[in-house]
Length: 318
Image 1 (tube, rainbow, N blue to C red):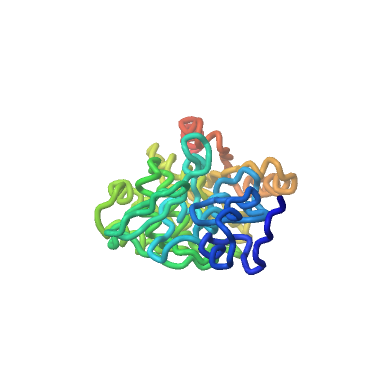
Image 2: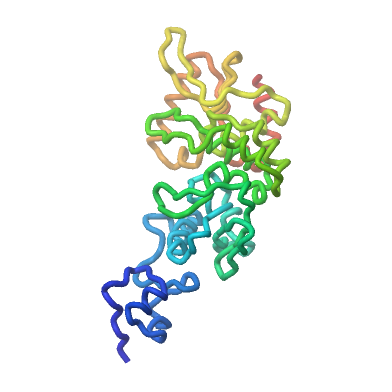
């Protein structure tokens, strides 16, 4: 039996209420050609994340948030990890998936005393009004906790204190390079979150706030800095501009000990797989050596598997 066509007035993503108002029967809404990503919502056609990697949990979360927003009441907003994804904050993969490696439920908040939502695919949170502010996301157009409020919420999720500092660094990062966007928050706004009242993870937030810096360009740079400082080494200067003896610009190095002319550079995987980037790195390091600098190159394995060996290397050079 041929299925009845859907009314042209219905968009590829539509609510059950919209469909019923357009005269669509309940049986047609149960047809196999329609997906049901969330309660009260239907989609037709290709509805996957646009232009993303097939195994990208952050892109998947953004896509599901756009879908869920169609059915969210006005008193609900995205919070915690989902808010962090929408703001583009650096999170490890393990935070973005559930215990089985599948998609993490979307975090949706409501202000107390309202009851938090409870249905499949959603993790509801009741939030005290004093502990969060909500805005409309500037590009996604969905209600979401502010960047600073999101940082406060992540204290209940990110148990690695280095990760909490990395998110804080990302929020207050100053514009250092061409095309950099303005900071999402200020240190003062983060401090206001800490001082707003007790919440899950308050002690971690207070410790993290003191370690947040405005010139860290990535989660890995933050982790490298904190590993060195935690080991008793001096705190390096972040994204330091190096000039030669004639005043000519040589390079901007990730972490630097200018008085010792020691640079610590993180080599992401793209440095190894992009031949042009690899060639630029070689020339860059040659120029630094010519200027009298020692370059210590750091990989993901150094940071996450053998940090003690990394610290020992830097200590020996210093």
